[in-house]
Image (cartoon, rainbow, N blue to C red; front, side):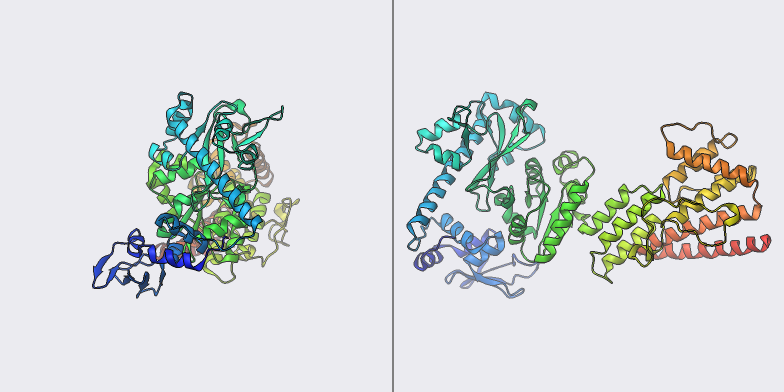
Length: 594
């Protein structure tokens, strides 16, 4: 950070118009010697915010926030002191005087300022070329075809790099910039012959700026498949460091401070689309990994009470990146939420399909990182097999372990996982060890049922009960068919056993008919059911009835867990009555059997 003389800082403080600065955030009216209005730092209906224009100070009698022009800009725009100081000086056209510098430091500063000037000049050229040049028409069509408005594209200075090999290079030289400066700014590179050529050619360009709007580099999108990499960035160098920048932070910081949140996406067009939809508190990380430097920038912008919303891809690498980000956020005390996106749909697509309302709905339904990750595990789990349920349980248990013990979040997640995998809650919190690896190699023969317990994977109880009931139905003739018809989708904890029931009911007289080799799991299950039905013969009517009631009781318990989770007391009472009814029926059947 440059060190400025105290006298020039004081001169700036006396020059800035405090009322004008604050009026950008809240409406003020004069009352005596002061100006009052609604506080921009907290919600209120009665004005408690006061500005002393003469002394350049502000104070809120509601939330007790107060300070001078520097602190106001820092808090409302998410800037550090040095950046706020330089921003105010630039707006007020006051030159800040530097304290005596080391000659080498002065040389470095002078070089940096020239590189920044070169990059800003080039951004202006690219932006102008996009809208004026005939050969930029495909780029204009692409951008406008994505639903991006010309107003937003111009505001972000999106541009186009012409096809010519040395257009930027020769223009910069004619304006007095050296080859070494062109290389330092990342705008040129060495050709095979040793000369300089433009780094970006025949690409749509996106200026990559810091929080003050100073262009430090470019991201450039190819317009043809044969151009190589789809996106090409400025090479890491003196000014540009990808892991430190957030695309759009200069345009978004005021909206972020006002909204108390920031929406983080991956790509340039996502930012442009959301800004066009009125969600101006959006920035992009230009990749899937949120770095510590970027998180620090977000923390400054959003403030201590704000929230960071991640709207990134939901694949495994994306989930892992979000978990790492969650760990870093916890260290800094930052509130982090995940916005679940439809698979294969990015924010720009969502805006194009549903407008601002579609994005707002996704933001309103944001979740903690752990909640989102657990849901993803369950959504992608193979619930048709013991092994799949076991793997999901182990993965979900590891995620839940990262939540605070005896918290509402952990209780909610435990209930959710237990319900979806149809296992006791103790399995989820780890009181009962899961069997890792393959499913049990031995299933109990009919004569062994009811004797010593067999070690099976968590969730196997439901699958086994459903499979056994299907076999009993197939061995019971017309009575079995009637029981199959009584079954509803909610009686099954697995899509596979649900599909097996549908197949057996449709082919009751010839259950092996209609099986296709394209669905091996279904064929294997149906064949096993038929073999067991043939080997055991017709069951007693009471056994069939008792097994059905056991499935009915499992269904009620699953629905009851969901009702408790959702706080639906009316449904809980209904299910409690159903539970008592089933237990009475079970007692009746048990009496008949014995």
